[in-house]
Length: 498
Image (cartoon, rainbow, N blue to C red; front, top):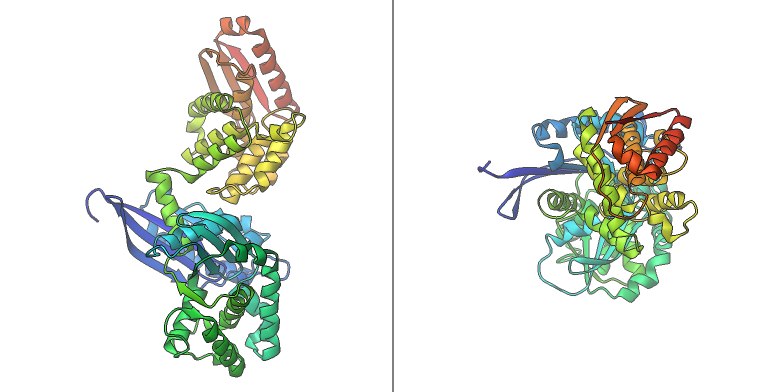
């Protein structure tokens, strides 16, 4: 590798396939140096109760072990791993992720459908040549389909629907059996999923329609290599392809030129979803992009490390949109991170420091609803809003910290959260509470010298100048009250004077 070049990697844990792309960044240029793909079929490994079966988990873990061997030696901040619809649905995803992170050697995020759509467009946009007007990007994955409308680099519509090539194939073509009745039902079902968005999508009047991911590329290859379309995916070509698929009768009989053996079991379901989209939106032609989710994850990651973190922009946008007192939020952030830095040697990570800072900035977001119980309102808002750039685990952590930043402390909410490092999240939450206490007056004040230490998992000691406490009796009373709140939850906050 050339001197000074840095390697980055993105892994997409899709419902059908796992993909890894490794690239190096030099002088603002990105060069892909390695790609790996494994047809894990995670979605097919979900049982009737939406639990990942042991067989599917083992396939996935074996793949991640191989990926981890390739990534050995890369910095943690230079690798981003995202899970999509199958892991969003799996009720035992937390247990699986704990094992998967050990096999891979890096942390794994579960992203929302809307965040997946944003990253899909970011990946596609890197490979699209020329400006043909407003774009409609369609990504048919294993368990979900993402629809994005964008003007150049700015999405104006993002949606994720619960339909994909694996889920459609399993539901309508079980055992690989295909006939005209099943195909019609598969297309109709996909059309029904699209129905609430058809008017909006038509009204946005996209001029350039682009398909991404394996389903679109497989359909494009089959149409081209079998003389059904000269270029791209056409409505006319799709109609002919549907007839040929029905005529074949079984998925194992889909021996089309350009169709891999591993794609055959889910090809009919993918074609049904694509046909429904063409019919519902009156499309005639779609070109295919090589860029998709993993490329979007890669570019977003490089932006985080080298340029501007999308999550930081999201926090600023939220503060402006919801009229959060920025000066107060930033003072709470500064105080809280000062405390964090004193205890970071206990095993806290840099990514947790960033999350804590964002929670401090957003801790009063619930005031937009009502002052009474605004910590509860804020926790709910952050749990369920779409926050571009944030994973589900990160949103869960933000939600918990804001929910618990004042009043009664509920450690059981931390244990129930999907955030894996519950011990770290508990400590971060208690630090945020102190940051809020020291800034309760909502005016700039000169804080004294403060020293804090973690005595045990349930105990902290905070040391403050004696004269400052004597001169600020309200702050001293606030600290004593905070000590009482924590004591009632089984935690100790000792207040000592320097």
